[in-house]
Length: 111
Ligand SMILES: [Zn+2]
Image (cartoon, rainbow, N blue to C red):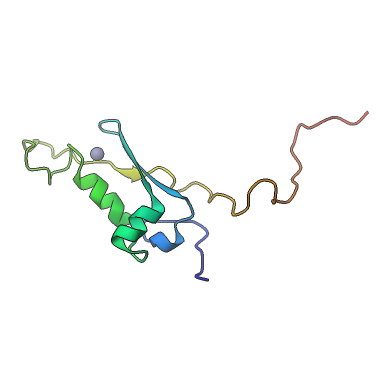
C-alpha cells in the first residue's frame, strides 16, 4: 500500500487523493465542477498530480487567457480555479458504525 499523505496538496497524486470526488470551484464567475476520482484516474492515470486536472478546469474557464474566443482583457483577468477540499482535514477511512466512540462536549449533564 502506498503511503497516504496526511495533508493533500497540489502535488498529491490521484492515487493518494482521499476524497471520492474532485471538487473544482472558481470565484470570478461562480463556476463549479465535480469529477469522480476514479474516472479521472482512468482517463489520465493514477500518478498525475491533482494539480493537473485543476489546470484542465482552469483552461476551460471563460476567464482563462487560453480561451481564444474571448477578447484579451486589459488587466489579464485570470481564472481563480481551486480545489474546494484542499486544506480540509481528510475524510475518515471508516464508516461511522466502525469508527471508535468519541466524547462530544455539551452532552448529557450528570445529576
Ligand atoms: Zn475560472
